Amino acid sequence: MDFNVTILGYNSAVPTAHSHPTAQLVDVKGTTLLIDCGEGTQIQIRKSKTKFSKLNQIFISHLHGDHVFGLVGLISTLQLLGRNKSLEIFGPVGIKNFINHQLSLTNAYQNFELIFHELNSDVSELIFENKKLKVYTIPLRHRFYCNGFLIQEKEGLRHLNMQAILQIPEIETCDYYKIKQGFDFVRANGEVIPCAKLTFPPEPARSYAFCSDTMYHPAIVPIIENVDLLYHEATFSKALKNLAKKTGHSTAEQAAQIAKQAQVSKLIIGHFSNRYKNPQVLLDEAKEIFAETYLPKTLESISIPQKKR
Ligand SMILES: [Zn+2]
Image 1 (spheres, rainbow, N blue to C red):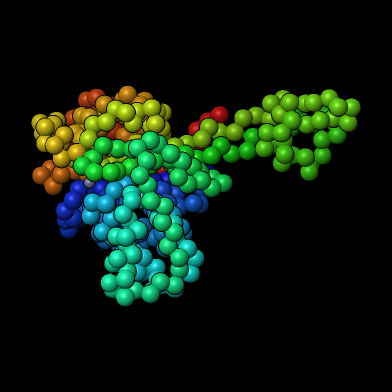
Image 2: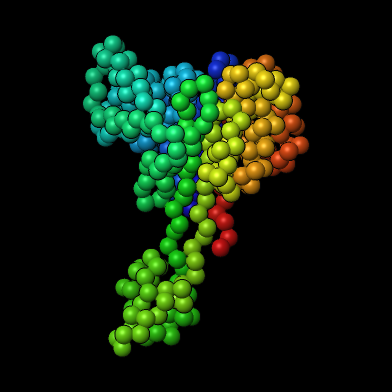
């Protein structure tokens, strides 16, 4: 089953003709989440050929414009398209006012409910869960309150060991689902056959961590440890380390250090300052520390492959 991250935009504050501010779609087995919503995100969603109707949860890292200015436009479009199901928005305290104020000033009538989940915790917390995934916050250190998001796939069902199953005649086909869920089987004589004897483990769950915007903040390492894919901002090169700290951002070297400490499988860097006409310099810097570093491409869909059990 699929686990894909589509980079809709990865630019820093100022949009350019060929790059867009931060926004990503994360699709886990058919559940599609939008993370951040910089200006123009709805056009990028169109280009990605994702149906607006698939969006039910939006996660906003912080209230800087390059991460949120596209949200009211997207909500307005959803309304024009006749949406009637509710939409959940997770973001810092203030986001409800920020959106409702704009909707009210523009006299926008909403035919669907906006459910705001305002965040203010400084510790990682579970903020959303469905049958397929969980979303946790990753408290970041920026110029003001900001969260990254950890998306964890839930483990699937266990796999039946048919050779073992067929040796227990009382097990009927209708028992399979419970066994796959992890329940032991109790024979008519009361003997308990442990589930582990009747099944193989499911494929390991996959995970993705989005960390933007933040200065170098090793406190996030335990939260993002061993993720399959990490997106970490790398606004500056190490030559501008002081400026990075002052503005609440990271260098490419620091992003790579976080990836290395957390032993992630793969790192994508982004949110580059416009001063870097070619981000290769940032990639080279990061790769010196963490070889599995890559540059994002707009509208590229990155697949996290199913891991072997
Ligand atoms: Zn910011």
